[in-house]
Image (cartoon, rainbow, N blue to C red; front, top):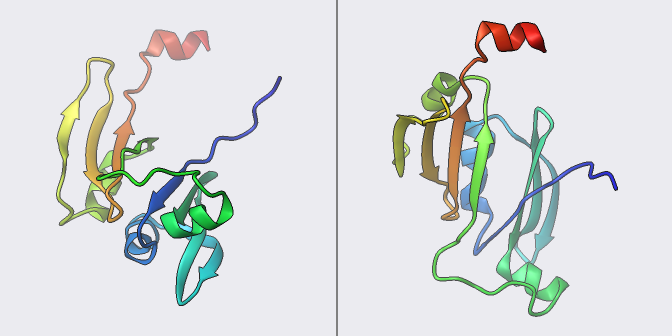
Length: 137
């Protein structure tokens, strides 16, 4: 069995407030949008081979009744590995950090915040492999 891709779908009340976080701050492109009345019901966002989908609770309920239980707060947590944390920090200037910059025991520099839909996003830059490990690869 071969798995080819994993794409998270974040369920939110409204998609529109979430879009600037991804498109304007982080450079994602909206490749698909599905209207639902006068608002968006579903979108796909893409950047550098990373794909993310948003769907409203109302749209999901129409697609598959009973699919999602509406939580008090979104419980999704995305861990996004990036090539440069400093660039992410610049793009997210002014956004409240839920996880201030830290370095983990496994060498990742990380920051985390909630996107406008309430989901926690943690951005991580992994430490470079020691020289001997790189030579062995």
